[in-house]
Image 1 (cartoon, helix red, strand yellow):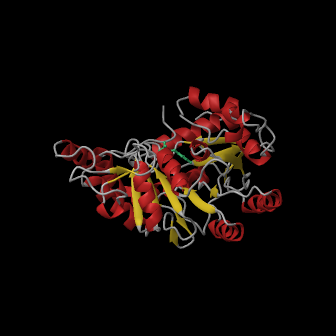
Image 2 (cartoon, helix red, strand yellow):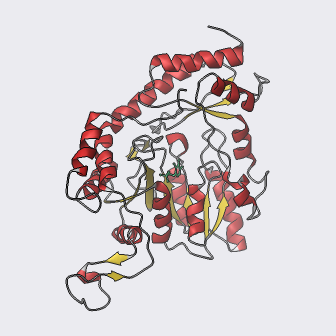
Image 3 (cartoon, protein in one colour):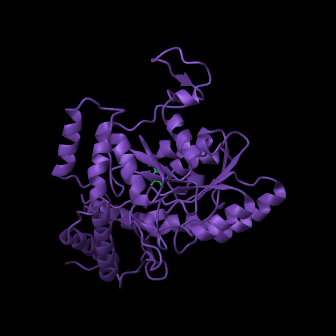
Length: 389
Ligand SMILES: *Cc1c(COP(=O)(O)O)cnc(C)c1O
């Protein structure tokens, strides 16, 4: 089975992890701060805080921004559940903004409409979490302008988008948001096995992220509330978690980061090749922005109802049966049973639902070979066009 995504591990990764295993620190050593500094440098951001997953990063990003019970947090339905769950961990109420059907990203016009209504009802969001779906940036200028007008904060869920750009700015630079979150799960662009990062330019938010990552504990003398009892002394000053990244994970991150630009370029090369090979298929190809360089985590096609009667489930099953490990991104979050319990219903966000009925993510990763890609395309030809090669 050709998977839809997979990690690339080379000898330098293996050596880096083994070196850490033989060193004095498996956790809380020098490599996590090194990885953080390298990510901050890469993104043109001041601070980066490494954690054990993007889910944890989203959670502590919400906490750092003061999200709590009584607050509203908005995100897109076309995302992994974690982008919405993070607000619920803090006791806040989640709502969604439907997508732009061309980019599959949170639609800024829908956002503006919903903000106007919320202002009247007195339930404006404290935080909005745009997700750069497939690696293509959301319209951050527009979302940022709305945040100034309606006074909400922004967490960019850039789990798909490390290595990508918004206009001339690198994703993570924080020009249009308070905190940006990356995921290093093996299907993402670079990996630390499990792992995530929260990036910010705000020193207060950075310190809050560090505290929430590690039990809310400080040992810094200038931060102590009470007088120190001695050199062993620490204080828990707020309720935090153990969301720390290990040294092995960070070591992997450092070596992976060296390949990031090459791997994103390789994804672009493969995506262009898909575009050419699939041009005459009864599918809608993903749009590629000239303006914003995508991280290209995903290559998503949609079956074109005007050109084929075959339904998505049939095509999906056939592809899987023939060894092509396709996937579907995403089941809209609001139709998950746990969200239906909160009152959301099918029909609430029709553009996300329509997109969901038609989308298929094709295999895309840095080491996908042309032969494998041809196999994907030929298998699709067999199913959609009845062609046998
Ligand atoms: C993968 C992903 C997450 C969660 O990342 P983990 O590191 O697995 O916790 C969150 N949001 C989006 C959009 C993702 O794709």
